[in-house]
Image (cartoon, rainbow, N blue to C red; front, side, top):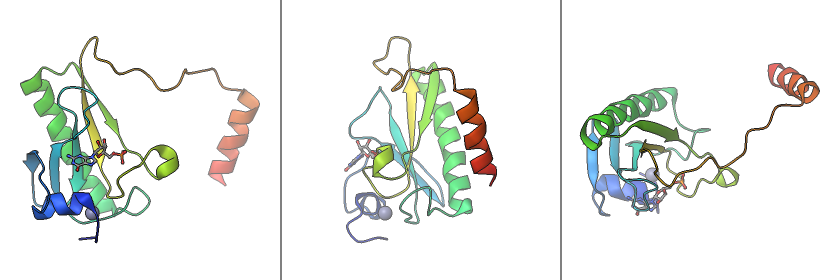
Length: 135
Ligand code: 5GP
Ligand code: ZN
C-alpha cells in the first residue's frame, strides 16, 4: 500500500468504492466520473504507479479481469461495445497514480467521441519512427 494513494485506500476499505468484481490479484469498481453508464476501473491489489512500473504478472491479472468485466457489461448492461483505456503519466492524462484500466461500456448514441481526427501518415516520417523504435 502506498501512502496517500486513493485506490490503495479503496482496496483497504478506508475509502468507499462500489466494487463490482474482485479476485486474488485485482479489484474492479465504478468510476466516480463515468463517461458512459457502467464505466469502471480495474486495478491490481498491489500498488504500482503506472504502465512503466507494473509487473508483467499484475498486468496480466488486470487484463484478464478487464476482459471478465467487459463480458459482464455486455451481458448485464447490454453494452454494444467496450473501450479499454490506460493513461500512463500526466502528459497522457493520468490523474491517479495507481495503475488502472478503464473499462468503458459503449452504446449507440452515447456521448463519447474520438479525441483525435485520424490522418494518413507522412510515409517518410513513419519509416523514420519505425527505424528509431527498432533501434
Ligand atoms: P486517470 O485520469 O488516471 O486515467 O483515471 C483516474 C480515474 O479515477 C478518473 O476517471 C476518476 O474519475 C476516477 N476517480 C478519481 N477519484 C476517485 C475516487 O475517489 N473514487 C472512484 N471510484 N473513482 C475515482
Ligand atoms: Zn495505490
